[in-house]
Amino acid sequence: MLTAAENETLCRVEGDAPMGRLMRRHWVPALLSEQVAEPDGKPVRVTLFGEKLVAFRDSEGRLGVLSEFCAHRKASLAFGRNENCGLRCLYHGWKFDVEGNVVDMPSEPKESSFADRVKQKAYPVREAGGFIWVYMGKPEEMPEFEQPAWAPTPDAKVSIVRIELPCNWAQIMEGQIDSAHSSSLHSSDMRPARSNTAQANGADWTRPSTDKNPRIQVQVTNYGMRYAAIRRPIMNAQTQDYVRITTFVAPFTALIPPNSSYNIASVIVPRDDTSSYFNFIAWGYADTVVGQDAWREFCVVKPGIDVDSDFKPILRHAFNDYLQDREAMKQGSFTGLPGIPNQDIAMWESMGPIADRTSERLGASDIAVVQFRRIMLNAVQCFQDGAEPIGLSEPHLPQAKLRSYQGVVSKTEDWRTLGAEAEEISYLQGMEEDETEREMAAISA
Image 1 (cartoon, rainbow, N blue to C red):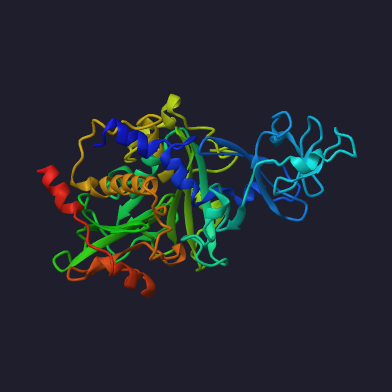
Image 2: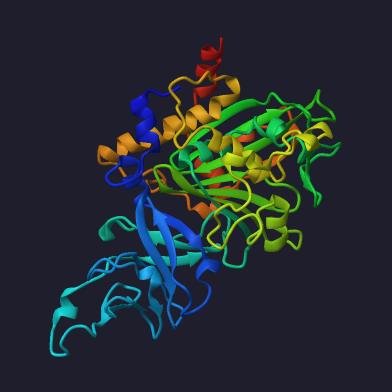
């Protein structure tokens, strides 16, 4: 468990909160490219760390992310006209380019130099991996932009489910890191099968194990951590293990163990202290990578049906118990909730806007969750003491080199390098082994 003060430090991101300041030093995956696909299209509101912004693509395809409220009289630019390479406020016609420069000020005398002295707050923007990225830290501290882990090269096939949720970022990220819950919560969608690998079979996923009690082992890195959930496989359990390795790339990304058809990642971005953007990603290069529409149908998160144009839930909410179907539960559904993300969402939101971690009773299966908290609290403390933000210090391994893993392997295999590329293996071999498993075993005892 955490103290109340530690919980506040982990969760709070608005204003001058240390966690928010740390996150602003990273490139932030703010919204989907499809939300601003059209040049001169509708401006899109987005909130990051409690700050209200507006994103748009101008006439030449350049991207801008500005403060939502006009520098003049603070009217919302979300109502503005996106035209002729700029966003024009409806109130008095002031027009701003993607860098926040005033390019027209019709309410002021033509001979005035006022426009040269006004600037709308604007943030640097990049586009990659299906997302629009924003840097919100100090300009002189801006890191080089890198391809994300779920799109190591620009030609990667990427499908994204996105949902805006009314709960804090950390409890969502903990759900992505927690491997043990999948054997229960998602048991109707992740079915056991006699094979040597996890598979995606259209209507559901399969995995080669019935083991609901994984052994958790953690390896801390300077970008976050890798951890293995080790289970008994259905076949050859005497000589083999089924290993699922999750990689946490601080502060936004969890690389979830893949299946035989595509890789999986989650990206969680704080909207404010008590709401978040949850992005669930399928990616890869083969023809087996599920397409965007099929991915959203599989997850039961279809725009216009399950979520609106801003990716806010339409059908399922806490007040209607997420339309949980008790009759379906009698017929074999474990949760009565369709779609893996919807099952998770019901759990995350049920914890409240910010989960109370002061009265939890943690066990051995929570080792990776405990380590996530320690990593982020330590990262904040080091950042406040003047260190580089987690993930940006040397030795630096580009996100494009990072991977998750799953497979049935010999019990003699060292999981710490499974699925890693040569550059990552060299990096990992320099990391010290983590003591969390031993500590948590003592706590559980």
